[in-house]
Length: 435
Image (cartoon, rainbow, N blue to C red):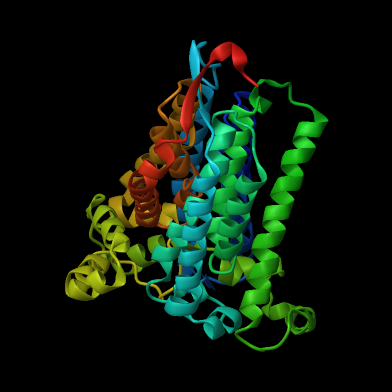
């Protein structure tokens, strides 16, 4: 059955690529690696044993088999949505278009704000020593708020690309500072921002209207390889800090000397670092063995948990008991820090009905909204809000649905709060002056 699921996933990615829905095609590739790839390894383990353990999830053979049916239905629906839905259509011609043309004062203020946020994050919230020596500095209480705030440095480049305006050195400076600081705390956010940039470049810089050539395929392949190499390479260096300290050379040497503890080992990554299939299979296994612990909340816990994640640390302390109650509603318990992927979250919250909810949610934000976003011409703040929401879509596969909801909402709030600074930087030009 795993081979059938893989075939459906590949077919879905190809259909999405043919219809020029880049975001959905990438989500299918992410699913192939995180879910289907892990399923192959788990299936091999369960041939020799009645149960196995992946990423702190105990998985029985019966639970794994039932979870495959869950994924199979999700895969069939995903392919069906792709086959019977319209792909990208060129937007209607406009008389006027927006251009984003900030002044030097704008860049001065934005760079100053970026540096101030970075300083507070590294020095006051996390501490320089913890930033340099700990494997997960982004897990320090209060750090997430400032990591998300750093995203304001991405907005000038995104808006320049979205509205076909000339990109300047200052745009890249804002972008590099934001991405560089974020990379030190959260590899996942770097993936999200890169995903958003790739999508907006593809649709707004004319790539979508070009024939699919070897050069285009090669460019996207290289981009994917570089992002994957960063995710696992930088992650391996960070994780090595759990076992040793020293220079980057020492961390590299540790990974080479202890491949059994390195994220560069695919076997270890699937067993400890990936929760794609293991989360769902573990939840199904526990539901079979302990049916008394199972209770459905039908999305209520997802919404409330997402809102709770938005609260600053001092507010979380004030409503700590309520947050604990919300977290207890999630009946499938795992150690802190272990990610609950979208498939697992959908099953825990909705039961078997989740195999309908999950693909609809992924299709809505991975296909429908991106096509509406780039087929029509929304106003700049709406464009940026939708773009950041689309950029967070990989969290639907890799993380909890509530985490995707929280980050999507957080970025929209930040955009609306900071927008007065950006609003004065737009002008309208006749459409025939397109660059």
